[in-house]
Amino acid sequence: MSAIRESIEISRPPEDVYAYVTDPGHLPEWQDSALSAHALDGAPPHVGQRVEVTRTMGKRSFPMTMEVKELDPPRSWHLKGVDGPVRGDVHGTIEPLAGGTRSRLTLDLDFEGHGIGKVIAPLVVKPYARKQMPRNEEKLKNLLEH
Image (tube, rainbow, N blue to C red; front, side, top):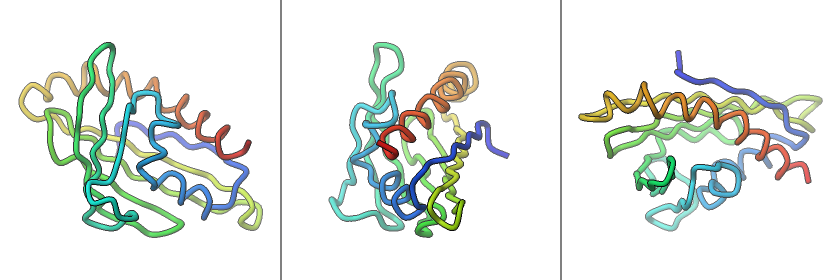
């Protein structure tokens, strides 16, 4: 069971939603805490790819590296943090609705703490992410529908 699970319906086909959410360059467009994100190899998304993401929390920014663990277009993907004191674990699924003209996006997010991250993850990071996820999904919906 993930620490955080949020779903939203989007009036776009699963292929469109999948292409957008799995492109790291779009992350800062729909996630408020993401300052920047890019694939380290510059290639299209693929299993084993590493993505550098810089996030903010309060007035601080934190670089982190995520690794693509799974890609199953246009149904699901999985990214896992590989460095830093708090490592995210994100699994996304997209279900077709209305004959494939709409989609239900579900994001499962959890965190693994290392060192000081064992204290920070449950006390700071999880509550912050829990508050941000519904807003991020609404922002994503608005971007994809307009």
